[in-house]
Length: 564
Image (cartoon, rainbow, N blue to C red):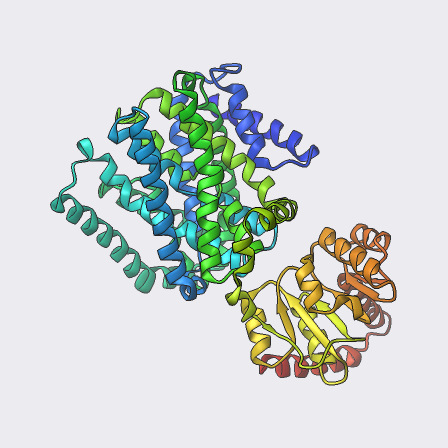
């Protein structure tokens, strides 16, 4: 019955959020508050929901583990490891000292420092995916920082759970040995068992799905046996699948179950809201919010600048990591359950975790406006930062023509269609491309093709590609709002420019025409029309020669492209 209440209210608030165009995460948390003891008090067995919520966190981290591509992050290993350690130690140390001076005990101060130090992998990965930014240089840094934090949290949980947190080398050795055993089993399964199992039953949907679930629950069980939190096992189980060729399919198959349990988790997070934090001094609560919203983003801002990002990208990293984590919730719950933190501090932690998680999508989506505002202030108050040259890593991801650009073609987006356009036009026309996928940009730089790394709606990028003097603007990126913004600004600065864009559907095409696009192409419509033409010819005549000729021609073309 209680589970039904959670799902029904989560669904109702989800519908409201969708109508109001708000993040679903906020809807679930609000649903939890409504049915919580400070709301309608509809839940009679909170323990049952708490168990399901813990499974929700486990499935979140299981899917994050599956989607984690450590191969791509390996190039940034020094930055993400040193940066994450620096941030966690700095935040924890500052909070520990300030809270201890404010009258809290050492244990509570340490717990609070760690609760506020970690950022949410689930939130940032989901939001980066929604914004199509996960393949950017700053997107990879964000994911890398979050994953290193998760690893630290995994190692710290059993230490904090030890009686009175008395550290000893034997205890550390036991924890390290248990972790090695868990990681060793993961490696053995990854090398010897899982590839064969998944390959053998890949086409049997039920068994493939059950193998995935079994992997998750097996590591949850092993983690529990070795006295780790179950989320540790779930995360390692997901990482175990991430290196396999079936990781994309595995992630897709598990999505429905993940969303179900994640809904329960976020609703339960709202359910734990209470008014016990009113017993705390207001200064402590304000300090907690300042740490999450100001201190952590500021630390990551400077770390990102030092790593070679430009100020705009560095600010986005800071904004994206300005929230508490799933592990913050687990730490707070563990400390409260073991009597290591007070009810008031636990309640305040839940409040900060909930509010910061809910606000993250807004900060990330409105990063342009925040950057513009801070940019104006910064030039006056922090001129030294603006005189210092940053962005070396991003500047390496550009290859500009030696001659000044004029009457040229600008191609924004170098996916399949964009790369075809670049390949077709590079010999006969002056052009330059733009893309935010650092791997794709590096690939085209290696081919000596003019390209700039960055977002299509970035004014600095417009200046570099000479948009004001361009003859043609081709946009193949999928974000209709971003495309419309670029077209409108391009037409203001260069009324003679011809803007051609790609749309996914008729509605988007109409929106782009309203934004002053000169021509909008719908590849799927063109493809379906071509298919219909040849299908109708075959149905009417029964002749296969046209289809066979097309097949031979297309296979030849595919073979040529595959060799590039």
